Length: 202
Image 1 (cartoon, helix red, strand yellow):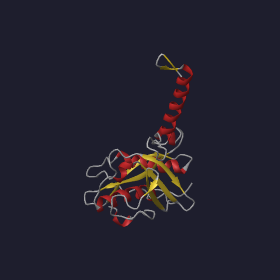
Image 2: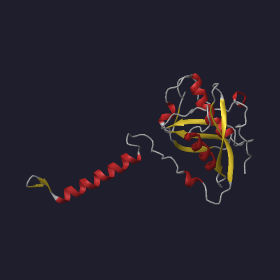
Image 3: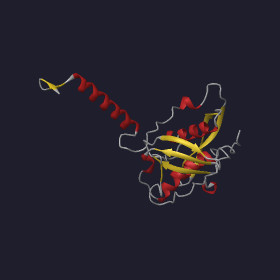
Image 4: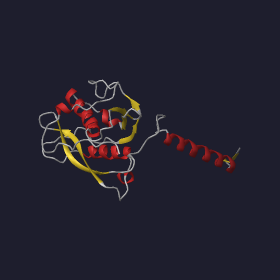
């Protein structure tokens, strides 16, 4: 019923509650009916202030098209998976060394990281990771992720790449992603910036 061309107060309240509920549901579903958005975990939530430092190698492109490692320091948090997340977040920062190139596209976010009983890590990224790349660029992108994990944590046996919570046949159209990506150490530049030996499981 209306009063002078306006909705009665009771009807207005019902409509307001219905619309609010719909907005909350739409937001939780990512705004498009897809999987819920998983925001990038703040770095400070991945370790405690008393956790000891841990030196790792983070992999970037070298001038000759192979990979090279830069030493970075993360923290030895009680949960091993939080160390994986710290390492991948350092990868997203990009290189600091002269002549080292970024391999992960600008604007890429790490959504979540999981690990199964076989030692396969599932790294879930935002859509920006699947940006255009040639075959070498795609290889470097995948190997930088696998190397940053497998080159530092010996219990990691492979890395499955997910984008927006979904598995892909390929990242940029050149390489097969139906199986976990395995780090190829033979194509890494050997230099002073090489990473430390992989640390064993705690």
